[in-house]
Amino acid sequence: MEEFEIKFLEVDVPELEKKLLNIGAKKVGEYDYIITLFDYPDLRLDKDHSWLKLRTDGKETTLSFKKRMGVKSSDGSIPDDGMQEMEIVVDDYQKTYAIFKALGFIVKREMGKRRVRYQKDKAVFDIDFWPQIPPYLEVESDSLENAKAAARELGFDPEKGLICSASNVFVKYGFNPNDYISMTPKGFVKK
Image 1 (cartoon, rainbow, N blue to C red):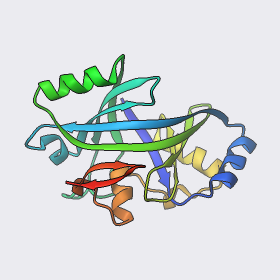
Image 2: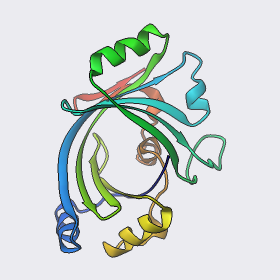
Image 3: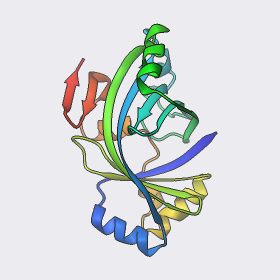
Image 4: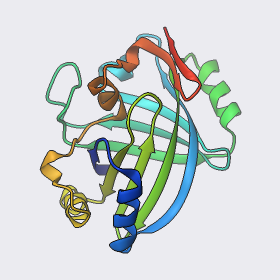
């Protein structure tokens, strides 16, 4: 499955939430996520612009494989052509974590964020609150054209949005995620 998403940085959250309600989007929920990214010891997933992500909000835990598609630079910087994603629900964060460690995977990074999600038809609007950077909006849909249309409905110019990973957003604000083992609201810990 591919996902098509566009990010818009430094949003005014109260104003954005008013706009979302005005276009008929419904608030789906608010989540505080704990995220662990795994890789092989030789970082082969990272070198292939891919990652394994274990994520929980304390109620639901998911395991996903993600891969940036059509990366146009050797360092994985933007732009690219979206993301391939495969995701399953698992029933236990700690046991899944332990399985990956037992299989020889390493923890590439642990992260934490807050997310507020709205939805309208096929469009999902996620307002992400990562530590140390301003909140941003991610507009996701089943096609890039539908994501662009949803962004336009909110008054955003899709051509001014970013098609990139959260790691790329951190880099824009001067944080190279590869320098950190932990990036959570409690603080950043360098490797």
